[in-house]
Image (cartoon, rainbow, N blue to C red; front, top):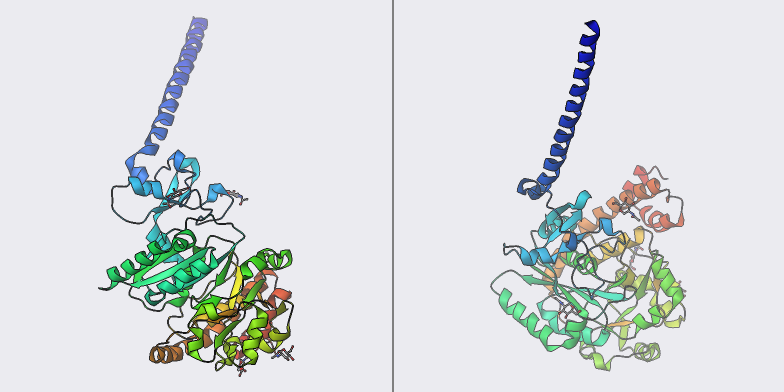
Length: 452
Ligand SMILES: *[C@@H]1O[C@H](CO)[C@@H](O)[C@H](O)[C@H]1NC(C)=O
Ligand SMILES: *[C@@H]1O[C@H](CO)[C@@H](O)[C@H](O)[C@H]1NC(C)=O
Ligand SMILES: *[C@@H]1O[C@H](CO)[C@@H](O)[C@H](O)[C@H]1NC(C)=O
Ligand SMILES: *[C@@H]1O[C@H](CO)[C@@H](O)[C@H](O)[C@H]1NC(C)=O
């Protein structure tokens, strides 16, 4: 009797265990099924839309271009702008999404305007920016030098001339006021772009439509940001490139190594004609150093902005006239604003707080210098300014404003970079030489850093 009870009990336990196991399996399977099935629901998609597998490798712009918002070789963390999604999307917004891949084929998508508002967050906004408004069709080599420049309405023809003359990559930030004249200006731009095949081959246009005038440093950053090569030249479009420094630099492994190190920027010395009318036609400009020297000796040509010596004086023109070799700028002045070729990645951006005339370019060059990048002057190459009118009254007022801003900015930068160098262990290295030399003159810096 007791035996039967215990046998019945153990049989019951067995049945129960079997039953329990089956139920568990069913429930687990159901749970897995419903969990995975829910991944694609609309609710989730609104937060983490599922990336379409075949979109994972969509080229950013065009498969023929090597450009990408990110040049990262790590495709799993690559930032992508999804033009296909744009084409399929039913809303008529002109901007694509930017997507960061997450696990399991998900991606975090953001409106491109939102991303750009953060990228250029120091500037006045909102600005309506269209990157690659027109895309150059020629293939771009990564180790080439892009002319990064900013262009307004009265310089469209000058840009077109630059394209034909340079026949290399150009990244142009073009600002157009968002007012009644807008369509007329865009028509002009389209006409110039259509009429010159070199514009179509070489010039990427990044269009900014807003009513903020003269945000030069924002425009410079836009031109740099979307440049597709490793090296850029920060160029004023008015300057004529008299010599072929692009070829000279690219064929010189020593100079390329210097550029690639990220600790050097190359200065191309700038000149202007003493009599404005001599500077109107670039076809009459010298194309070799010896020809240039003749015109300098005859008093026809001189350094650019001789009346504002600190702007280009650090290049040391006396030295340049006699020099056959690359040399380093030793007498740096915080108002120095040479035209430089430098590495895109790792170099500082231009502070977008400088709006209007005065100190804006100097501020870019100051930060580049303080960050540990030395200036090296190219001995055989030069630029000549093509004459045009300056709006003098505006310039004077804005300069006053920016002078104050710049003096605060230098002090702030000195503290910021000093702190960076202490953190990275570079404080005692040669990378901090430029900073130590320049910042030591600032009283607030000396006391904050406990320096004598
Ligand atoms: C992309 O490149 C192809 C050639 O590879 C060209 O035919 C096409 O027009 C380009 N598309 C755009 C939008 O530039
Ligand atoms: C690539 O990205 C993954 C995930 O974001 C990361 O774990 C990995 O370290 C990255 N590799 C490189 C070489 O950056
Ligand atoms: C410029 O170079 C010349 C010639 O090499 C030199 O004598 C002079 O001291 C330099 N000027 C400055 C300010 O460094
Ligand atoms: C910059 O140059 C100007 C004019 O040559 C000079 O007066 C000034 O002292 C220089 N400043 C520095 C910091 O070198």
